[in-house]
Amino acid sequence: MITILIALLSGLVFGIGLILSQMANPAKVLSFLDITGSWDPSLAFVMLGAISIGMLAFTLARRRGQTYQGSPIQLPTSRVIDKRLVLGSLAFGIGWGLAGICPGPGLVLVGTGSLHGMVFVAAMLLGMAIFELLERYRARK
Image (cartoon, helix red, strand yellow):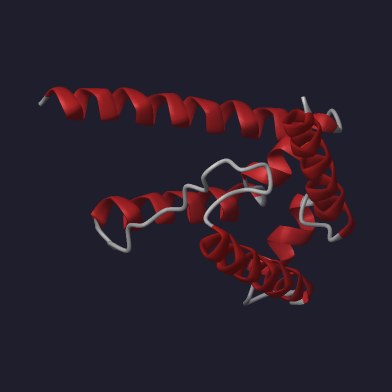
């Protein structure tokens, strides 16, 4: 039960942070991505802050090896940059550039009742389902 409450609190803090930083505002994100037009660099500072905190958290997690509740921490170990990673990154970037939304802010937008967010999350789930089907097909070959 405590794990669920910690997860809920973490998600709420993350969502509030996305709202306050305006990362859940597609117009703000699109103006950040518009480097040849009316570029708004403010989200770069939000990302730098998030990356800094993330680097610290991953460093501490690697050193500890387990959660504060005693469960093992499973961090990614692969450092391979292959065609699948590059194509997935391109698909993510294109989607982010077209919609101005990525998964975390998309879920925040769903929580606010945004139709734009609901369409994005539905498309994201469809993409995840297609990926899963392709992975199963690939594993059979």
